[in-house]
Image 1 (cartoon, helix red, strand yellow):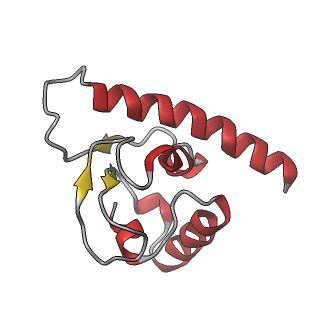
Image 2: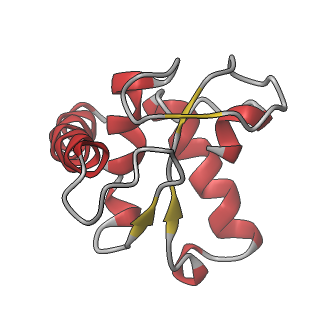
Length: 113
């Protein structure tokens, strides 16, 4: 998760919303075609891209915020971890579960805003 390593807290709804607004203004969200998703072994803003299995790193459940954002609906996601066992891996199951949780989180956030 390169945004995380660069200091964007993708687990925080307001921080992610601000980052996406900036991205949209700079290049347009319509140009985003795929998500690169990994958990992280390193702290927010570490400038170190050290992947961890989804849900086992320091972002952990906070990935739900990122994966469930409405701007990413329908986009494919790629993860690069060592848990490569084919299409039905636990890593992908965790990503799917986090996305479902994130969709609910964003729906609640939008109702409050």
